[in-house]
Length: 157
Image 1: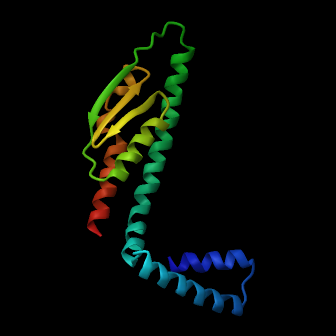
Image 2: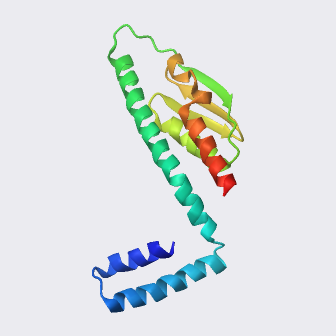
Image 3: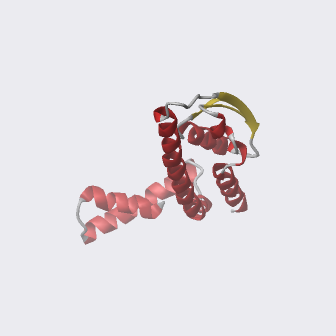
């Protein structure tokens, strides 16, 4: 966090001189101390963030891949003259422990074309799917697996 504050100081100043670095170091240290003392921040959060970073990038890659695949399926359904949609409202329970992970999963489902999270109550998800094909395997998707790994990393640190 200290390094982020210092980098922001340098970027906002637009140049690097000895005076800017010294003043930026002092201000960044003061701001970091303030965050630790009054906002409940700790170095453990930085370590946890760096351990989560590879999983976050992997999650975003999986999300982007699923969005592209679902766009192709929805486009096929729209352009196919013989296609008859069979919408479904499904219910499943996730094994995710944190509310943050459940909200991320609900938003990821909604971002994927052809599915919308209608309701999220505790661990219970209600999802509307454009077709029954979209409903298959939604409760054990790659999203759920990656979010469970992220929760495990957060508990470890």
